[in-house]
Image (cartoon, rainbow, N blue to C red):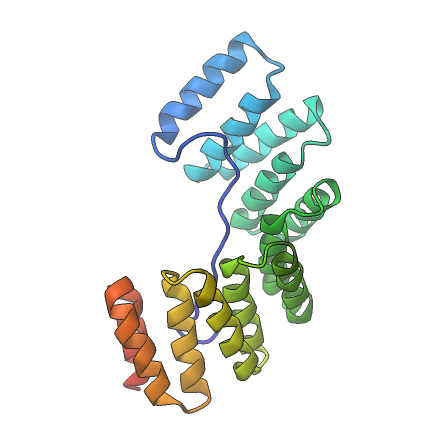
Length: 218
């Protein structure tokens, strides 16, 4: 991946607010000790395990949930994300494809499947996954941002620039898109446009701004 370029990973599905995840794990376990067939509680437990980076436990909870409801698409999504974060790419691909089979309009599944294809070096498939995501949800800024990364890897920098611009259209606060856009401008020799992105980034994300500035000053 070119220096500084950033991929956006979509978050887990969870029917709970973020934060206090360790307490959520205790609550879920207690509830399951009373109602063992509570598939929703297994679902929330997988989310809490993922958020606390206990990916093996998350996968185990997903498997238990799927024994109760083998057609629970969001469980497959969380399982795919856990496999992805562990680096089990083939397993992540299978889980995300199952999510899509059960929930064909799941934008997040297509986005994370794109990341799986990225790790497999299958960039055309990656782009197609992101295109599918934005065909379902036109304002899926993260999908556009990741699409730009894929185009950039293939040396298609003008297409990458358009993808990042689309991402910014739908999420003007997505610092990764400005960073990647600036780097793409540098790839085509447009240092002035890259510096414009730096000026915007200074107000959004100082760390990303410094990354871009280091590339501009090379």
